[in-house]
Image (cartoon, rainbow, N blue to C red; front, side, top):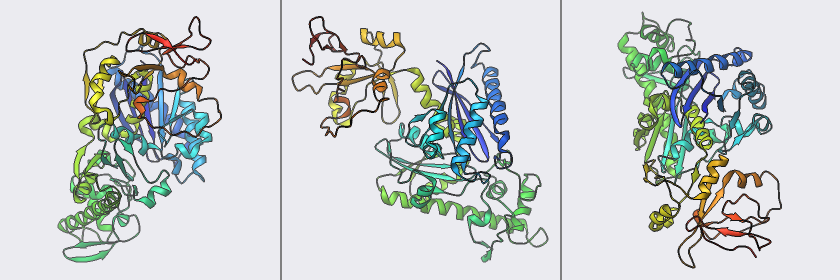
Length: 487
């Protein structure tokens, strides 16, 4: 199985996550403000690539003889002010990826959850622009089917509703998400304090903040001890070091004051009020989302500013779950990069999938037995080995071809349900060619739909040419028996 390197290329930070054998082993971030030198992105990616692999080798995860690396990419850097349009930004990022990963396999994640080649991503630039939230939300949906993702990074906060394991965001673009409340432009580091609140209360007296970018949210949280100085990765407004003392000076300056006119106790009050305002703003947006989805009571919190998101979720009345509990601290802080790498790893593993609808819950055990299921995944994210080894000849064929598979069931209306094994790679290949569209009404759940194959296309492993039949015979995975097919 190839090593998968996930990338989340932002305007202020580049994040990378390495997945080996389906497991996240390295996650790291490097500060890089693309607006200052977009031409340097290629070298930044090359250096990060080398550093991540070096870290993996040092930890014993990767040998010097390991094979090629496959790259999974998502981005938000296209919004940087150096680009006149997002299309220009997407193309610049992809050009850098192409140069840094020359000769390697590259897949670009789109907001619809699908993958694009770099060439297609240039054409469908709006689909891949700022798609990283969709990757994280889809990952969370696998373990928390009814929840709101609260991902607070250095600059923004994503609030994404998930219902029944499906991402149900009202907006797809940044513009739409700003309107829906699913994108809140406030983060743990880069937000100017005057964007946290227009006024702050110090010892009971309200002061208007100077709109001069004298201090950032990072100063607030470093002063309060919630953010490590090493996580304050942007240049400070005054160019001085990231220490608590200098953070206090910058916060005083936000009220046009200094150490002669404001004490540390005054700064305590100021920082607390600003932090409270930031939490309240996110909580208000979360309240809007819960008004649309009142059944959602769980918030899954991620990102560098998880401490902010957790406080906002509690204020909004949600039960807080930490993504770090399932993905680790590194994965939760670099969630989009980890998500795209893990998604691509699942595809690269070429599993055979047996989807089961909740409506057929009573038959699940029977379906699992018929399909020779080796692992069961619950909607809550629990994975259980069944102890069964899938030995049917059709599975052996898929393994030989190194193709993924899909198992679907007949309705069982004439007796015991039968499993049909499909070669998913061949099946999907059929849809690469545009065909005449038909309007259809589906009356069966996904796990009971047997897809048609008009011309005996080998897309369905469960179909084979019959010796006396101009069409084919169907072979069922449950019995291995055959009967006349489509004649």
